[in-house]
Length: 419
Ligand code: AMP
Ligand code: MG
Image (cartoon, rainbow, N blue to C red):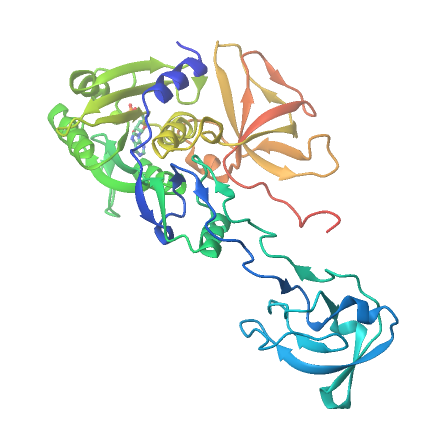
């Protein structure tokens, strides 16, 4: 067996980011930028009002309450057609450009409309700059806005739009093929014949690939046949940037994925000191066009294939997608064990499927309890879990001890406290 860290390092060293290319901004959400984005213009582009109210010369409000004539209305998108002179006010609405000559806004709540809107009583003295948003207060022209390695999130997509950026240079979304192997597997809803089970890994892995920000490609199911597995992997290597298979990587004679990857790729078969998901075959297979495509031979047991995806394939795929080192892995947090997590000594790190709940009263703010059956075939308990408690080799932990939890989902929680 090899330690988890060594297996992970082996995988990550062989996963390289896809070459960047120009991408229209509207297609870039979820992609990783390969270069800096520099603001070509200021945001906001002009001084404008943060409030509905009246644009004034601040000096005119010094003796408040004062009454001023209202000489114009300025709305968002409709600048004033003349400057504001001393002793005047203009009605102004949020987002409208501040008229030339004005230097402050009095919020409407501190005014009284008089004479059918032809005048206003100002009840408060304001300083120059009150309720104004200055040009460039969000971004200055020439400022670096984003850097290589930043993912285009919805908010960053909005910033690109606010700057009029129509195209970015980004790593393309990796296409990831998924294959299931096994003579026992059935894909459709037909009744099972003796010895058959339904293929659950392929739909699961296709969904995990999509959730990880990659494009899933269904490469189908192949029987335990060396030629069929070879053809499927080669099809995947030709069409995809990475390939995942499940099954056929354990010790047995019919664990053909291992045999095939050994023959067609630069493969390492690893027995990783973790439970579940001990076996992992990982290799690079060269496509006809010379590309080196990472192929992950994940274990067949449904929970094992998911855990192996979370710990090895997902970080590898995120590297292919261009994410920096500190953004490859699922977040892990400290939580209080809500019950004892017992285990035996076996030289492995155990990952326990748990339900994680936000518990403001506890030291860590999170509490973890088992999500149910911990067998590597028990997918239902995995499906209930939103985390994996990391139990280092030993005899486990008592209730109340603090453990590390890899988050698979979002813990149940209430709205923000004090909000
Ligand atoms: P293997 O790694 O091929 O020896 O498979 C280990 C276990 O996982 C066996 O019980 C298989 O039947 C099961 N298994 C393999 N592939 C799948 C799959 N795609 N969906 C559900 N179970 C699977
Ligand atoms: Mg099998």
